[in-house]
Image (tube, rainbow, N blue to C red; front, side):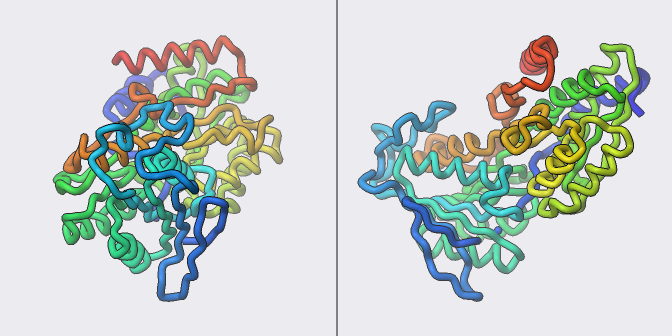
Amino acid sequence: MINKNSFGTLIFAIAAGILISGCGSAAPTVTETTVAATEAATPSSPEIIDTIRPAGMTAGEKEEGAGSVGSPDAGTEGSSWTDAPLVGIVAGTGGIDDESFNQGAWEGLQRLSGKIGCETRFYETKSEEDFQKNVHDLIDRGGDLCWATGYSSADLLLQEALEHPDTSFAIIDYSYPDTPANMTGVVFRSQESSFLAGFVAGNVTASGKVGFVGGESNEVIDQFRYGYRAGALYAADKLGKTIDVEEVFAGSFTDPGKGKSLALELYKKGCDVVFHASGETGMGVIEAAKETGKYVIGVDKDQSFLAPDNVLTCVLKDVNTAVFRVSGEILDGSEPGGRTVSLGLAESAEGLSENHSLYPEAIYEEMLQLREDIISG
């Protein structure tokens, strides 16, 4: 139950922040496109998606229009390398086309490849053994930078970083207490954008009930969960009404069926807006919204195209730009490892989708002002 009395408690929670952020991780499938090379895979070898730079592009050349948001300087005049770097992602559950977390990271590497002509590889990992094989495969190929996309891989990646000090490593959604010199952690303040989503949901709900579907209950998903709850509370306080927030967890980031059943239960209970922070599981939540004619809030990427009449807004987590920028900084030596990069609204790495056709312009303008208020402290 959300009411005025709990306002201070939840605002304190969001102000404090919940450490790290993201919607799942660990992951390879072999595909072939005009810029991809297919490689045979045996049961004992890692499956990979291997992308090479576009034909005719040399290291240092830019892709037309690449890097319009937060471009790294890597690959421009004065670059510190002569040969094309090799950068790989050892990704988490959900695959390369999850319309969410992993896909955003892969798109970041594709942008980087278009800008500096680096070679890129994507590995999908289903076990700890696979993870180590994939990392070692990248290192054996002369990899310059290895990314992992999620907190569940943190301990394994740290071990690899300590054992291979000449290779650079980076991880999305984790911050180490003592970060090795060849490691970079990237975390997102997802409570900020989730607060904005909760504010929109609190203004739009007609039933006074909104829902949340998390992939798992942990510190990462709690950023989305508490930010959303606090935003709904802020709206309730402003409007002088009470809002219930129902929260459920699927226990998986790769189970659309479970996501759909949980969302259907929430809609049946009277929730008319449901926010999912659950990776591929969220595809089922969106399907439930379509079936019931209710609203859903997407996550990580703009998912409105999946259900234009139902996706109220999306909490954007720009993993694409984070991978693009941080990779460039590491490769050109301007920002070496041994650090954690924290990204949120102020860095334009978080936010809500611009599309607001399903709710009034006045609410959108209020949300934008709240965004500025959060940025300014």
